[in-house]
Length: 489
Image (cartoon, rainbow, N blue to C red; front, side, top):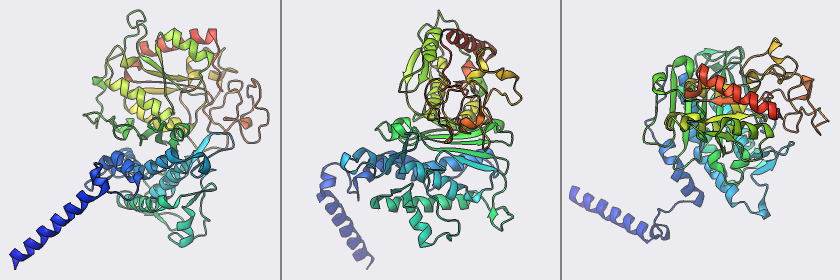
């Protein structure tokens, strides 16, 4: 009897192999898959999201645990992000606007922005009691009525509409499965430790933290076929508004997703840049200091800039630093490029990578980046810190709220506003501000958005983070500013 059973199994296996070999997909060199986008998804996501043996690092309640689980959520969202990206690639003029649109300030918005933020806020972090959560797409995400019971048909259906955009039918199973896997992740690794005032059990180890989320940093690149330059940025700040930890995840980098995560206070720093070696901890002694002699290092290293136009100030700065311009999109992506060059570049070239910008990004772009960069021994600071007082507004360094890094707290007004520094633009002005033409410098905090970074930024890795290195950067910035003042727009 046992022999007959084995013969039956052998025949079944042979038949299965034969049926697969006869399929057109097999003859073309790949196994049959339900839809073409699944091929695209599995190529990138299998190494990140398929492992059943995953376990978080860090003790419960630690920043490392928070970063570890947040990173895992990004990996679990990867197939959904890839599917939406594939839809954008295939979107023709006849059906344009199905999965993307323009916001009021003419910046790009896709259903990926809305879904990723909602999955993080309403599913992953629903188990945690934070001080606040601030996301870029708060005004763009569709939220079901608070009176709608969770798990009902109305609640489920609300996930299929994002700011007037309807989720395509073929993406809905992926939305549902991603919700389920991230919900299970949160329930397993963010333990219900106490009951809140409203009777809901939540993890209370992070009540002092504010979370800043950019669900798809570099949406313009994501929607124009440059997805390798976009990232998911998650930052955590303490009760004083200081960035203390972060995660940056690039879902579309080749040949696989890449990421960085860190929390300086816990000496936690981890990264995977798609190389043979994945760094799980960072030794301060392993990074050599950069050499700042211009003659010896002429035209070496890089200054990371936007893909678009740069200001006359940045053009002058490139000359003063005697470095090469490297174009790329997304603040999170540029910070990862800087960190990769800092860690793996040769001492003369890679260590000289800098990211200096006088044009505005926002708190959700830089909170996670600042937390990660500091964990690896670098810094992210305001550009105004490096300017003489006569160049950075109305006695900026004398104001009570002046600090050399941005303040990451939920607020109705901009906590780092300096009168007379920022130029009003359609990207940084508040909805009530009408005058966005010309070279209008703002002297009223109510004219600007609360989370715009109005003071520019200077970011550098460990090799620059010495008194000599910082002084070299400061002098180059001062010389460039004497030629052309920073735009701060």
